[in-house]
Length: 430
Length: 180
Ligand code: FES
Ligand SMILES: [Fe+2]
Image (cartoon, rainbow over all chains, first blue to last red; front, side, top):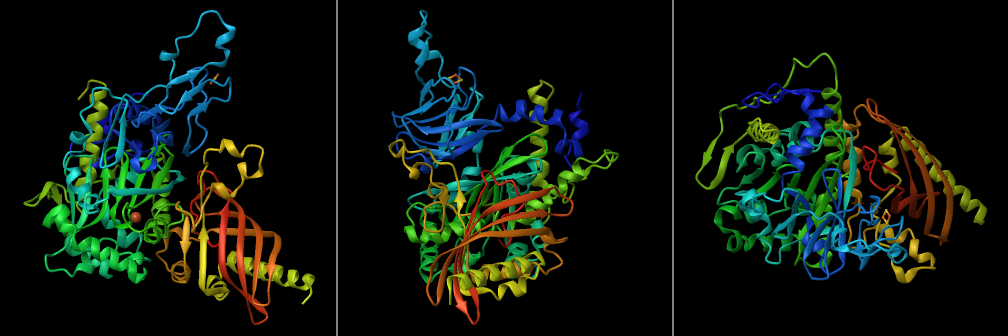
């Protein structure tokens, strides 16, 4: 089916067609234009510390083995045997010397190179093993331990791609001298919705909080008032976004300190509170005066990575067709926090977000219901309205990027402008 | 008390609990919860099989797949009395959108096995199958095991520890946040 992208997303991206969220042809084009070309998040270096360590990842629907090779380097390869295509790695994580394919037992090193072909002795013409390894992800780079891969060999360096997102991501990550660490296995949650909605939700949709989550976060609660008074949505580059509160200079340390807004902060042990306070006390040394006052909400890195600062989680929305995602969530903690405090901190994520989380069950309900709305007939002329605050965006002397406050939906318009541009550019139509 | 009578009382306790939950009488259910409750659901992943354990049952044990509260991994849930109360409380709010309209659930509790019993405390395993229908969505099926510590309370019990082992790989249900 032919699609008209300018019909799907209008020029200022204030009207978005339902088909953007539900159409198979649009999805196939997204794969070619975005997932085959962009940097995509794979995992964190703390998950693969020693040679032989591996974890599974995905680039869109393509299964990836992310591994620490015997050379100590980071490798990403497509988890599909060169012989008949079976996945050769059958575990979510572990440490190994070889992956053995079940079908004919070809074996591969963790870095994807083909090690042995058991049938080799039975044939005269020897296959060239050097050419028969797993398909490599050609570009793999990391920033602050966050590993990204791209199938696009000529893509810009990761740091350029992240741009000023590094300023905002660093505002959290850099305040921990030992860096951050991913905890355990990601929660993998299958949800009947389009991949872009969880992304949009974290990218800057702060104002759904007091409404969708009204049973837990009342608009007149402390958290609600704080958001009303101090929250910014910053779009450093269209497609990326950071939302946070910039607390006043004279705020008490407890009010700024990361984690204090959650039950972990409020109901956590005194020792945990002391720890959070101590991190905040030295934050300025590590991230400077402006970023030390930042108390994050949620971030998005184009196309499908989210970082939920307020509940210390990284999330990836892996598409499974236009109407389904496998939504992965990791809890993330400071690497040098005491081990027993890490166990308290990991709950800051899982109690609220992920499949058991008290908050995100409502998001998932909204996403599934939106998917129903995106799939109905006879309403194509009634597009989704993304026009709140159109043209009201501005700048801030201390915050790089385009800055908005309140219910301005610029973060989403910027995302869909980039999305439309990418889909057009991939077919030479931009 | 005879073993038979104890078994009967524990089973009756679980049946009553199941009825309260399926009837959405969570406030009454909450009275069965001990104030020092540890209520958890381990994460479940698929780790590499350890070659050195071949030939032994430990090679494919359930335990190695679990990321529970004592582990360094990431449990799905790790909750205390206060968090459980938040869940009970929000069930009766108009704007708890994930439960409004509420799901229809029906659970069967079985395989009730008392592992240890003293006068005050029991360690009990039970299995559940639960059917879940949220209006407007597909229907779902939950299965798993509960590992409980029950405390004697009057002529009944309170739940002081519950660990719920879900039989799932990827989470293909709309929420793991229900009372199980
Ligand atoms: S398919 Fe992998 S060895 Fe034949
Ligand atoms: Fe939300």
